[in-house]
Image (cartoon, rainbow, N blue to C red):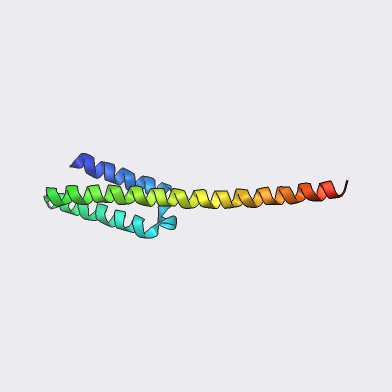
Amino acid sequence: MNHQLATSREAVDQAQMAGAEENAPADFGVAADKLTRANAAATGHQKHDAMRLAQQAQVDANLARVKSESTQARIAAAELTKTNQTLREAINRANQNE
């Protein structure tokens, strides 16, 4: 059970580092809450509940991380598209001035 709690904590930490608190706050909040509840259940010697909650926290944290990474990728793609458009316009102006 301690291993599962540690793995779940790591998943929540990775989601946080990926910006999930900002980009996927609902999913991240669910994961963090379940991890807190899993730790409380483990402390209360409710091993079955602790394991179930820890596993769910891990899945929710992974979902939050992936959603955050997806959001960041979409933002980066939009910025790249904008930069490419700006470069195309500059090239077109330069070609027109020749």
